[in-house]
Length: 289
Image (cartoon, rainbow, N blue to C red):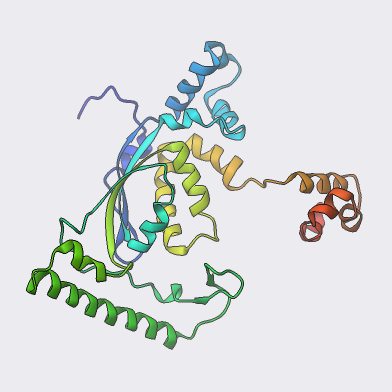
């Protein structure tokens, strides 16, 4: 057994190196981490002074930090993932400019014959109300779903054959031959990020409105984070993921409701009229009014 002076997380140790399958050919693989819940607490106590331990236990301090958005102690923990995903997912992912990334290069390597084809249940129509999303309510005939998958398979086969002709038979440079490959091609990268920014990433990409493909990658990463820093994850769920943030005017409206006013009366207040929050009030559960 290897002896180490590093702080260890039993939950993370049990999952290191395991490839979690995502989509048809992708995966998320945690390959290294630094720090655990205790490191976050120790970093916070450096700022607050040694007497803090008498006021907060470790879990209580973590929850205080998360609730009041004292984020820098969470930056003391880092994790490194190896991920394999379609290029279009990688382009969404890279918008989170808070990580260190090294991606597979098709200038140096031959492109793999690996393309994403969505499962039948993920073949849906364009939403008529959301310009960048799927319509999850309209039923799509199975025949249409299968036709879409067949079209994708056919196009992938043709494009990869053309790529091999360019890069192989004709000797065209790989950096040029790759330009005809679609964003459904799989790529890989090593992705290293601190816990604070990872939680922000997960807060956005676990949202039901996020595209389903990247959401599945986020779910695989969230499983590791929960095992790695369980107390921080608990606080994150309570104060971020499942919390209900309100705007100032929504807070004003709620205060009127809690004092016994009707939704119509609360909506008639100047602040609520100015902010047009009548829809918020009418959607507020009847049991809470």
